[in-house]
Length: 212
Image: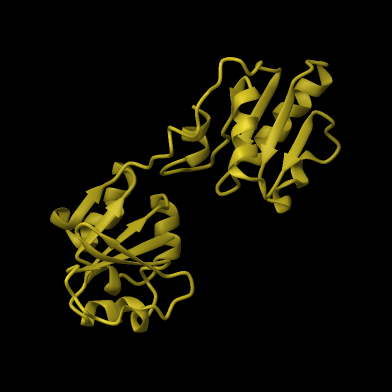
């Protein structure tokens, strides 16, 4: 996935609405100028932004293997003013496309004032696993099966879409959550003893940062 950020001087009187053909695009007036945030750097709107004297920056969030799989054409990326990546591991894919000067590493972060531990919340014999993309649910399910057979009393809270629940069928020591609020998620983090992220690959992991 990629997010395009298009900037122009705050003094511009341009009618921004015509530059938002993509659903989900937003406009923000900031101290450095006007920021138009589009959900996809590869959308046709990126060409409109380029022709409108914007600076166009895109951030890419996938590991190298997935980037090679999903990014088949790089012409639009080559025309970007800058590319933000979340990890040095992505450099090998993007540097040959845009060059070293236009590539910037921006580490992923979360709201550390919101996702905080609370000493008075009693820790339980619980594991938490959050997320669904590039997860190794088979390994996690096998682990929970062993813990169930040993009568360990450990419960695993799994926060992920229902389409990922299949590998855990028949396990009684697993509880599922989907579509919960940030406050509910924070409560799950606070009561758990261990955060487990079974990953096949990753560049940045929001659940790992939140659970810390």
